[in-house]
Length: 319
Image 1 (spheres, rainbow, N blue to C red):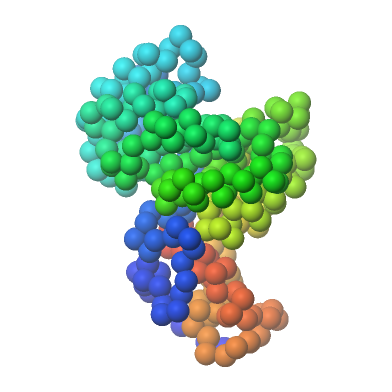
Image 2 (cartoon, helix red, strand yellow; image 1 turned 180 degrees about the vertical axis):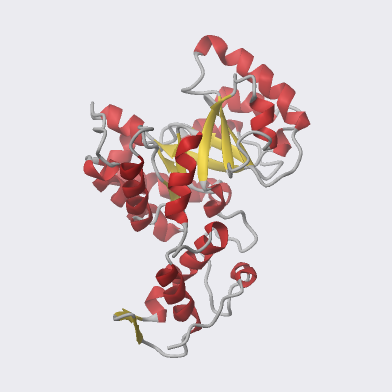
């Protein structure tokens, strides 16, 4: 069958009958736009150059960190640097977030001049016990997004994750959750494990944890981003891991170094065969059809197809 070209601009305007998730908005920032996120300690002297996009112009999203990458003795210096930076930020394509060390630091950040110039906050170690602490200091005056990190022992407990999902819905914060981040290294630390150099995260016990998190949160409308990859000298393994991330429905991945960005983004480019199949699914006037010796059913493949075309719009189409 022929493939009808897709106008990517139309992806933001759902067709009649399309039902959004419980906190999905057609005008909301897409989690796919995060691409590769780079954590940057807020103590760095080149913070302004990175934040403006002059340095690392290929970066799609940056997270200024005041938590694990900043020593306790340097916290005040990090906050002082952010206080100087925030009022100077200009609008641009780079998505900018801050990871507060704890709720008390979030309270201080929310009171800083220029805090409205960032897109939101990455909330570490969020679970059903700490959610209330974050909510007590939360101020939604500027429409910030939040990116909670699932990295405590509760992530291993399916029942506790279901409770967290329900509490997010009840809290009113769910509309502001851009995505949930999976803190792979913290979770492996709880198991006293560090992955081997040639192993992906899916070669560890976290494979089942990630699958459970996807099954718990995706049907409720949440997106999840992929864990960091530790090694700079294993691009082939990183590429394999990103392919598995995508197979699990994860979007976005944290990089530990700019050299990882092109490896990850190359995997985000949509294979042309997938692009053409997705376009055909959305354009089909038949209940089922065969394409490339695969069974295609628009009623059950529509959400996959929409995701593929959105990914293509952001990252392009490969060979």
